[in-house]
Length: 204
Image (tube, rainbow, N blue to C red; front, side):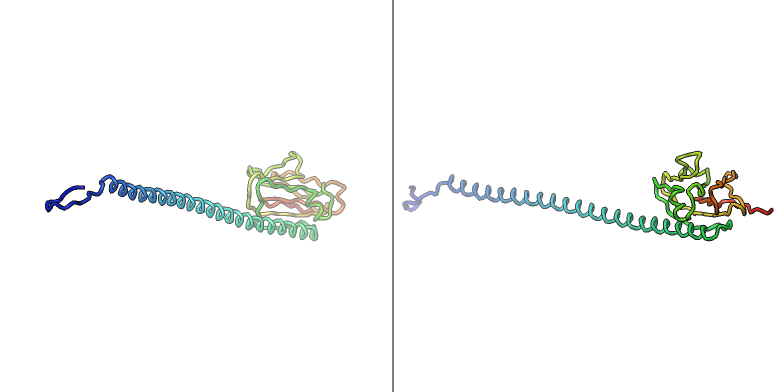
């Protein structure tokens, strides 16, 4: 207790209590800031994760759409090739049937057995041809021409011609003669990707 100027007693509040209360208040505010700051960081990380998931989902959707339309193009090309094979089998007179801008994917191949089932002839009666300056097409069984393969995606024209053994001959793009075996009673066919096969009718 102390006396004032009038001789009255009064109590001086302990300063350290006031300072302690003030310090406690500041500590609460500081702790509250830390909690809010932590929540803010967590929210930012959450937003980044959500953004990454959405970006990945969009990428998957885009790839799926591209794959879907690419498959449609491939299916359409295969159907067009099959139709031209059917047309050629119905007209084995040297007429050339063309399917334009067919899409062939990478690592794809055709063989004579597949085509012979559509043409309704023996597999030795059908062979393949292509421009030999194209590095994207090759014969896996070279020098045999009964299989044709593609090592990358290509868009090209497909040609097919069937010729009766007694009415003419078929030539490859390198001008070599297609040997039509004697076992091919009706006709032989030449299927070509990227180049129009040559047909020489028998004039005798």
